[in-house]
Image (cartoon, rainbow, N blue to C red):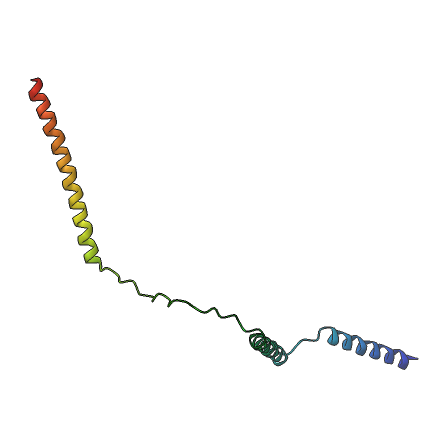
Length: 113
């Protein structure tokens, strides 16, 4: 009887081991790579078939497209000179306006006084 008990324990442990290996079956890296390559090839084939079976509708152009020109950048020194000129003009205008106000005030004081 001891032999059968021992045999039963061995068989049960072997069955349990096989079940755990089967349940925890890991996918090897090469299998995973093959699955990814297969999916990529399948999507590429589907895309090619779609392109051939359903070609995109091409619209005829009646006029030539406008050429794309690259905007020319203005160097910083040129920009700085322009900004300086503009600020000088603004300062001159403010100074003239202030002088005119002062002259008008002087004229008013002379007329009153």
